[in-house]
Length: 282
Image (cartoon, rainbow, N blue to C red):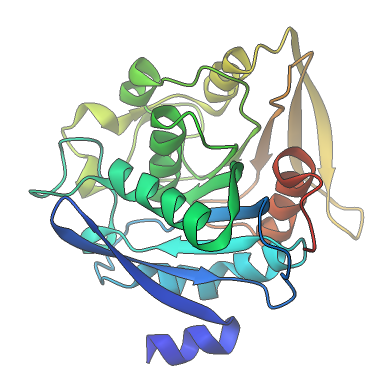
């Protein structure tokens, strides 16, 4: 049933790789108009956790976000990985044999080898628990080209171990009324984070400042009003200035813990400009 619903939304293929003796799976959509091999852009989108512990949450998240449709417009390949037990885990904290960072690196290798993707034009995107997974990948793999996180502040554990060394275009999206990931920082709500050191996250402001330092931004953020197509104010957008190659943006919206309406199109435009650049519509 999931496969039928997914294929109705986008032409995806399910692939598997062996990681640490465990078979891991992910969905891949390659836009039909891609013809030229090499230097292709890509985006890997990590689903959130929640109560659904099915093994094919990537497919459901693909249908929910329509991220593949947004990325397809710019000729980008889209990947939706499936977390073990419907979730993602910090290093050494998952079930026996589960290494999510190694899984992400295996996906990168697959994209480069199978589809001629440029590793510097692969972006990591994630929501909630998947947002922490995206940050874990960016912090642990210097070959990633961009980062977008929705509904997740940087955890104190990740901040202490983040190995980002070169500029990384980054966009963070926060809900001011988020009951799970506190906008002003603190403990993440949810059984999977309970009593664990990674349950404490930075505020939206502190998360943005962290990535601005990683991107060597020399000027404070400039706050802009974010407007809907009808002109209505829907939030704020902070753009850090004086950065090197990696630009940093922090969006604050009057929402709870959810994937914002229209977010996929906005994210794709950000990635097109900051990560995918010339390698479009091949």
